[in-house]
Length: 211
Image (cartoon, rainbow, N blue to C red; front, top):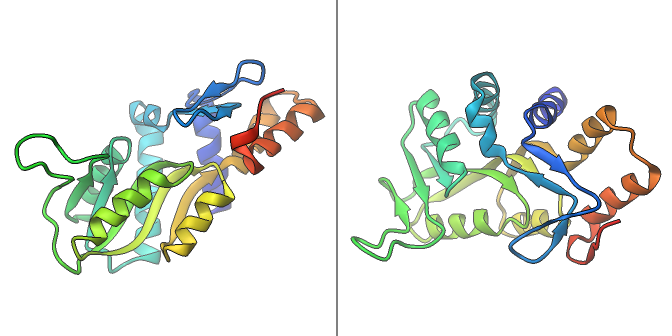
């Protein structure tokens, strides 16, 4: 898994799916300031990287959760990954909306859901974990069993990982913030101040104000 984590981080940096800005931090919808912006959806435009990520997910499911019966994507970024994984595993695929449709059947979950179905949930990035946990709750309310949540990247916030632990949900990510920083520092000459600030952000993102 170390090689997968390192390679995933390298790929994300190589295609500029991950960007850093220390003087003008990115602002999240939550209002938090961040030195990093990551758009894992860019990987979809690079077939070799896309296949690498899909294959890594598939191998994890085959070895860790061979009894999985369906793959569920978290809207929107988790949907294409879930579709590719489900195709390779020859399993049913569904996805969970951020909120129910306001017309038609007003579905929150799209696709056929079976009671007691064993499901793997697919996300692109784990930040606070809120979107994944909301999707998990919606699926559990339909009587399904969530085997795990898989994501490309985790920022490594303790608050997020604690929530998954409290909900007794397995969480696997291909790479994480620590690997990103290590690979980024190989490409850029980062000062001690910047390195300290990068790690401080992960510890206390809600109060981080930049450098």
